[in-house]
Length: 440
Ligand code: SF4
Ligand code: SF4
Image 1 (cartoon, helix red, strand yellow):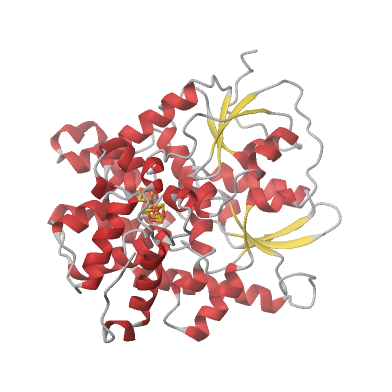
Image 2 (cartoon, rainbow, N blue to C red):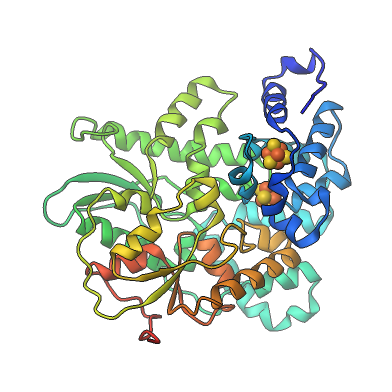
């Protein structure tokens, strides 16, 4: 694609990056066919190629974000399906990130929308505030008919039950069971530990049983993805910096005791949305070269739990019945991190019969905070995904991201669990309470 930035514009490293990304696009349109919003709406401006043109125009003419640009960029799920399809290697992820930052800086949003964004920025990353907000939302839910459409949709996302806080999410060290082979840190996360504390519990149980010492580092909080998705780069950098400093201390305090990665063999993530964000910590600090290098070192230690368990030599399965498990690959897993075979391979190794729904490349509509901010499109995608999964007649649905799990729960008859909960159960851990006997 031809671009026409002036030499004065090109003095800005951000514009240099935007220019380089734009120039790799050959506007072939292959990406359109796998873009969820284009599949639903059939509008070129709601396709990757259309959005690339809108972004090009905004940056080239150095314009503030218009209502039109904002509308079509906001509708993008950042699912990155387009990056998997693109034959030209267009780095759409970093392009849309820059566009979101520009929108955030130059566009004033309507009051209600701004209020919702402020809520997400301040409440969701804090487990305590998020827990309280869910309790308030749960009380208000019967009155939701009286609320504006968007708030009504948001209240509709409130789960019907809320588990107690899990003791595993506090900073501490879980010793390896038997011989200690590895030392890893686990991101305890933010929203996930409130919505499904059993995921971290299963992760710790699985890792310690396979010879890993697991550390929950003091001071680590939200990975920054929630605010980053909304274009709030400053808040994302603050959250990422806090985490990086905390994990650097872990590496430092034990640096002579490990073979790989200094004092830490890996930083384990069990929410693929967070993993995609953390693997990009280096790029997040592109304007601060010194810290970018430190961020890059921490990012290089980040592993999704399914990637890491592949290297641990999974113990033999103890499950006697045959369960059909349909695997729902989160976009952040398959497109963001390009992890496409490990979770299914592990599930099969653990004795499950693994199935895949049709249109597996399409997003379920969760996409971070998308189901809060774009409820209509998110529900259409959820129903489409739930239909495709139900066609496979699963006994259990497995996924590697809390967003998909919450988005699809209630729309599918079978219980939906995190992959790690199944792997833990199969290798001697606790059986998840939601699992019923297999149909066949
Ligand atoms: S597939 Fe890639 S090169 Fe083709 S239009 Fe889409 S982004 Fe551009
Ligand atoms: S990130 Fe997803 S929704 Fe956005 S343009 Fe790419 S495929 Fe479409």
